[in-house]
Image (cartoon, rainbow, N blue to C red; front, top):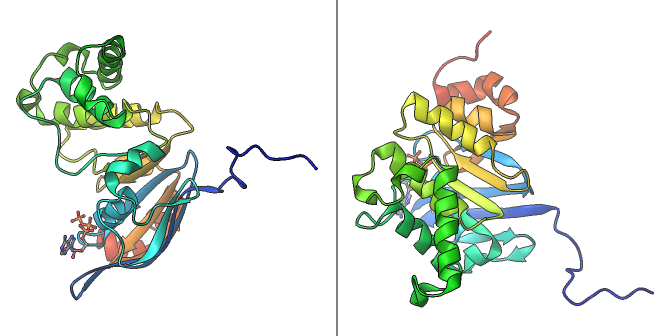
Length: 261
Ligand SMILES: Nc1ncnc2c1ncn2[C@@H]1O[C@H](COP(=O)(O)OP(=O)(O)OP(=O)(O)O)[C@@H](O)[C@H]1O
């Protein structure tokens, strides 16, 4: 019988991210009530739902920013329910937040560089070695991906809102994640910036697993292959953008209107 090398997992997980019966209680408030989700490698999944539905809480659980009250999260087959968020980038996970987190006093290049250095555990060796020079080049490449080449030496705090969001995205994609969580990437962007965001998201590696919380239905439906609708901490529907767009229940609870005839 052929032996399996020790480094090869016994089985390849069917899903890159598995959310198992996750509940989150904040005191008496149940922000998530038994959410189950399987997200396949390379899938583009949009999570939509009204304010307070539990979307960001679900992201926080997947990214390790909070632990679920009950239930489990597996990333690439590994149970990481209680793994702190700082260890999850090494599982290939990157996320952005609703509020920009770049250092306002540092330049675009420095911010992306620090994201890379943090990811590789190289905080203490800034700007010195050839590896650091490589990271500076990689930072410039990531900036170019989000059309910020002309702003490499601009201080983040002086960027326009849209450019700051582009920077956040560059900081996330620079680490070449397998799983990318974007929390409302289109928020506050102009129409032209939204078009560029869609173009950028469409250009990401096909193998990348992308989870998106988005209030802009146009962006969400264009990017996603599957849409999950959360309401009041529960998944109320999942389907293709076309199915979700046409679902009368979704229209009532989320859009507050009847589905188009
Ligand atoms: N740290 C917290 N402490 C207490 N309650 C919280 C906390 N975080 C979220 N909540 C509550 O949990 C519920 C779900 O919040 P969450 O931010 O996940 O919703 P959301 O769907 O992302 O909403 P939005 O679209 O407005 O961002 C809300 O009622 C919110 O007030």
